[in-house]
Length: 342
Ligand code: CP3
Image 1 (cartoon, helix red, strand yellow):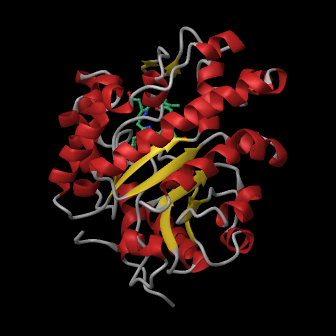
Image 2 (cartoon, helix red, strand yellow; image 1 turned 30 degrees about the vertical axis):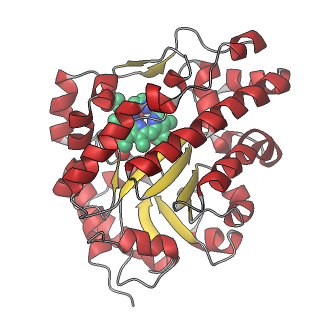
């Protein structure tokens, strides 16, 4: 049904002519047309207006030719729907005037009716699917419960999310209650996305790598596994954990269709740790897009050689940076499309 189904075939582990390519955070950030919209509408207006979300989502398909679209939205719309006030400060990032700091605060967090609170996301998906006209698949996403907790407790971005970890380790019972509420909301939210028409789901565990391997199981993976269990029979799920190479073995046995890896793990190690069968996605260092287009192309080809063309989705190891020139992003995408197996 979808004309360019390379991405969906790679998720199934089928043999492909070349790997599919998309870039994490490709919708927004670096495209000049996005910057223009950014001047006119604030962040959550862009998320809440289906017309704008659909327009931003399709920009990278039309302008750099990626093989999949990812819905323009944010992982933080979920905690917003759970009764938490979240602002997006231009140039700074997320800011919560009243972060969660005590078990009492956890009581105020609700598990909402997602269709009531997040209906605008589903409308954006339906409109985007119409606009895409089955050219490429559409990816829906959510943050992992741990990554959402990081923002809920810290109240803003952070290098080490020390307050979030302090809360978990001083108030483990309250932390588990909070993580379960986020998990339950995320499961119904994502089921709604499937109903609205997305073709795959990615879970972003952007801050999973801040936890020790043991704490990762307790505070992050346990909940991601619940999400995968709830969705895997309906739709392919990609589990991306930044810095989570240590968990690849367990992740490979989870029922996820693919695993995202970042640039600190070599292709060889990622294949070894994940057992060699599951589709992997990644792992170009986003900062390497500052190199010359020529160099980017060379390194991208080498990356595919290392992962192999099958059971592989070419991507960055984390989101594209806001000041990357479009021609450099284009060089990355083109190198994948021009790939010839040796
Ligand atoms: O491809 C896409 O861009 C799709 C949409 C998307 C956004 N955020 C839009 C956005 C996706 C998939 C996300 C996920 C997201 N959001 C994550 C997980 C991925 C990752 O990068 O680790 C996280 C941790 C967030 C939380 C978040 N949202 C932060 C920390 C920030 C500020 C820093 C930044 O990225 O600029 C945001 C804001 C945000 N989300 C922007 C965009 C395009 C930039 C703000 C703006 O456009 O006004």
